Length: 402
Image (cartoon, rainbow, N blue to C red; front, top):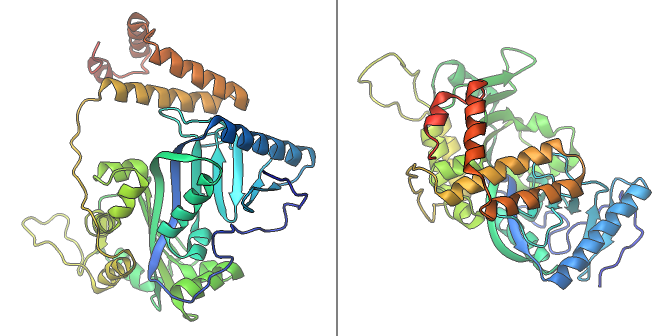
C-alpha cells in the first residue's frame, strides 16, 4: 500500500536501491554525464489506478500547501518527491517526480501512444557519478519502476552526454592547438568563453551535436558536493588544473550514424560512438590543417588528442557492436503517420495550457488518423494553399505521393 508521510520537501531522500554516497574512491577517466530516455511502459489497470491516484493526490497537496515538492512513500519504502505541476516543455507530461537526484516524468497514461512515450527518465551527472556506472543507474531506475507494476515495452535515447576528465591538463594546451588551426571537424559553428582572451575557459563547437572543452576544476570550485564527487570518481586528488572534454549527442544523430535509439543498442555501441565522434566528427591534428591544399596526406592526431581518445576508451572499453550504416529511403505509410502525429502532438502541447485538454486532443487526433477518415482532398487543398502562401516550397509539393 502506498503511504503519504508529511515530510517537507527540504528533506533530501536518496533512492533506497542506490548508494546514498560514493561508496568507493575508484576513479574512472570519464563516463556518461547525462542520460535522457523516453520510455513506453504499461501497467495493469489496478496498478495504474493506484499509481495515478498517488501522483494526483501528492500533486494537489503540493499545490495547496505551496511546497516545491511533496514527498510520498511507496509500498517498498522508496521515497518520491512529486512536484506540484507538470512539465511545460518537451513532452509536457502531467507529473514530475524526483527520485533522489534522478527525474522521472509521467504523462498520466496507462500505456504510451505510438509517437508519445508515457514516461521519461532523466539522469544528470550527480546521479550517474554517485551510482558509479550508467548501466547500473539505468537498471536501478527500471527495477524501481517495475515495482510499481510497470512493464517496459520500448525505449529511445533522446540525449546522451559522454565525457572524459583530464587531471593535470590545462585549457592553454587545447587553446594552442585549436587557435593554431589544428582542428578537423564536421560542425562549423563554434564559440569560446573567456574573461581573458589569452586564456580560454570554454570552447564549444556544434549546434545540436556538440563538443565542449572546458576548465572543470574552476567550474566545481564553488560546489562542494560536485567537488567531492570529482575527487572520488575522477581525479583521486586535487589537481592544479583539470580539463573536461564532453560530447553532447541527441537521439536523431545517434540514429543517423547507425547506432539505433533503444537503450540497449546505444549501450552496446558506446565504443563505436566514441570512435565516430573522436575520429570522424571532431579531432585535433598534429599540425595545422591546410584546407586549400590538394592531395595532402591525412594528418595524424596530436599527442594531446590521442590522450583524449585513450581516456575515452579507458572507461568505455571496446564496442560490443559496430555502427550499422543507415540507408535513406522514402517513408512508409506507418512512418509518415508517426511523423504527422508526432509533429501535431508537439504543436498541441506548445499551444495548449490545460493538461487534460492536451490529453484529449492528442487522443482524438490519434484515433482520427488511425480510423482511416483522413480526407486526401482536404490535404491537397491545404498543401496548395500553403504553397501559394509561400509557406511550403515547391519541391516539397512535388514530393507528396498523392
